[in-house]
Length: 164
Ligand SMILES: [Zn+2]
Image (cartoon, rainbow, N blue to C red; front, side, top):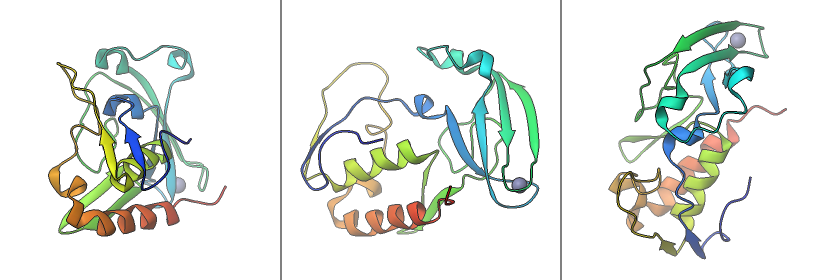
């Protein structure tokens, strides 16, 4: 998915909230260590997550590499670290950077991070209330002096994606 402007140009925050990026989460399979997916239950797939409470529901953990699968109902979520908000498994997309860990739930999340960090001009409309994922990024991610290191970490994460 391509969002916003070209790398190095201007990029407008599409104001996607972090929970809107959890439709598919790439995690490390607890059985084989490969890349597994945490998916929304099909019954909930057509539900628009207007509110974070709409996240409640069944999630499916599926590993194509070894066939491992698990379904569970969740009403509590953990956001803000390199684990999936549901099963709390380590994210597949994570990389050390400047003494921190950069992480993403999926390719869409990675694309957003890359576009934002690479952009020379970041446009953000001031909207009261809850902040978008990009607006909540810690300063070390968006600092100009860390730009090259952060982009390298993003490229390392992209290179770790399984070929499909
Ligand atoms: Zn597996």
